Amino acid sequence: MKHIIETLDLTKTYMQGGRPLEVLRGINMSVEEGEFMAIMGPSGSGKSTLLNMIGALDRPTSGKVFINEVDLSKLSDNQAAELRNREIGFIFQFFNLIPRMDARGNVELPMAIAGVPRGQRHRRAIELLDLVGLADRADHKPSQLSGGEQQRVAIARALANEPNLVLADELTGNLDSKTGEEIMHLLRMLNKEEGKTFVLITHDPTVGQNTDRLIQLRDGVIVGEKRIKELF
View 1 (tube, helix red, strand yellow):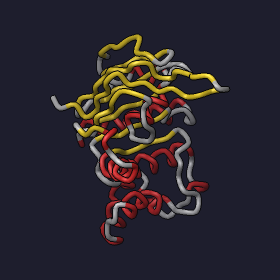
View 2 (view 1 turned 120 degrees about the vertical axis):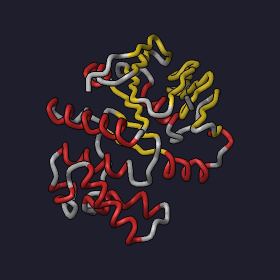
View 3 (view 1 turned 60 degrees about the vertical axis):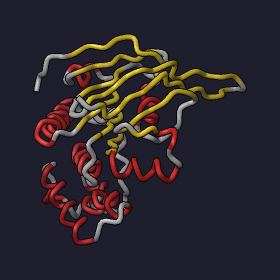
View 4 (view 1 turned 180 degrees about the horizontal axis):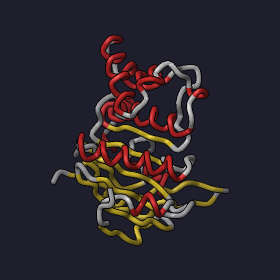
């Protein structure tokens, strides 16, 4: 099976008050294409920093990250930005939608950055909103949508450029339990029917237990890993 993500001896150190703070300490992990997995840990465990590394949003202090066998350390900032927009979809806890744009405009944005023609991106945005159950809300702005609806728009946006890999950071953190369960069902459907690879960063055991594999992170190191019986 192809590895869509691989990290080798990954470290990240920040300077805090003039002293080094080791956030990641020698992370070795891989994610296979088509997996539905989670990285779980308490606040301060390094999981969001790890997400930034494997999402090409930040560079490690040492070690390497490979995305689809591409060594991220060999990419310029512009090349890394192109890879993010083309090959990785991001879903954030706070949705990160553009307030002045309606749902369709938010979904179209990654495609506009990628240079997709207007008509084509308009059609795909509607298709994606329909996929997440929001075709009838395409002209609504984020302020007119519930938290669950905003997260669905964010999921549609993450899929805009047809990435194989989707990274989600605490995607249920601002949702009630029922809405969070609906979002997890939606992601599982996308994983099964479209073959998308999902890596979910979470501190919520309910999310972690509803994936196929769970990596546990604490104090910047992997302290456990287990396969989980599929619940969905």
